Image 1 (cartoon, rainbow over the protein chains, first blue to last red):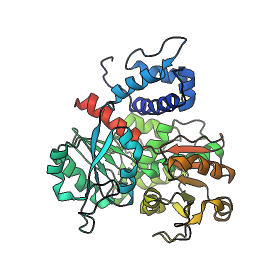
Image 2 (image 1 turned 180 degrees about the horizontal axis):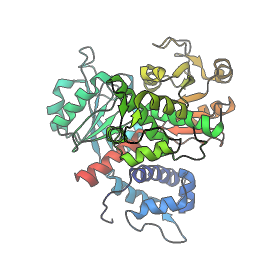
Image 3 (image 1 turned 90 degrees about the horizontal axis):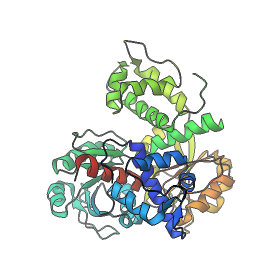
Length: 213
Length: 213
């Protein structure tokens, strides 16, 4: 794989989407796929597919296309999902529970190995996936013990920054934040926000400007 | 406002993020904000802020910056969130329930006015927000009756396409899809997918390439 410097986040996002489509193509029995077909399936243009992959090397065969299984393996390596990652989920309400229920996460190697809350009525309870809900106060040593590398924040907004601080203090360098508030972390820590309203804003923009409701 | 043609989706996404930061700035008592400060708060560069807004007209005052309240109003108009939108949520499990619980949605004008499921044990029950869960079979006439413009799919993957088809048949032209599967819809309908694994892939990529775990 080519040594990479700074690759656009949009490229990484699309690689993840290409990967998912390649899984489906394999499931449907395809051995090879053209950049045109992969692009069409992912709703981008073929040049984009070639450019995105081009950041990381030469994968396709000109005039033939990509080997569906080989390219999956390459993208898994690029995305570093060719191994398992341990996640801790904080805030075991409906959202945290829904996240832990996502079967495709563990299929993809994202293992929810710890669940935390600060509600005494929840602490000690067992989740449907069989995790005993732990006291958020114990986050630090549990992170060490279970080798947790990604923290998930599904708490109310008011608790999000405090939990983010706990993750940072525990040397968790990646946070998936579902709470509709921006959290501040040092540069050593990366945050991805999943903000429902941003996606709804995109839909309303398109309804208004592209369909003209 | 300038007549717009095709604006990059990334610009619309950032406008939504600028809007949220402007709300926070107003809350903190700021009257004006420079593109530099707004950019810093949103983790983009100032030229990007000016370019994004430039698609829609001239908003800032050179050397002074943007009026925090005025720019919020302008972006609300651009995103078409200067009025309420009625949403229907399908699949009232943890995820659908978590979505309906999001108070910031209704603050932002996204009103969950109908909840649907196909589980006889859930149909007829009342959600914490006071909605009586309806039979998914009734989607079509409920959409008409309640003037629903955005459909939310929080069902298991196996049910997602069927629900999407129901929304399309009911002339709902915008779908927010939480199920980890691509759904096929005609061009008249727009879909935004919220796929947790894509965001996790971005984090693992960064952990691997930028921090070097």
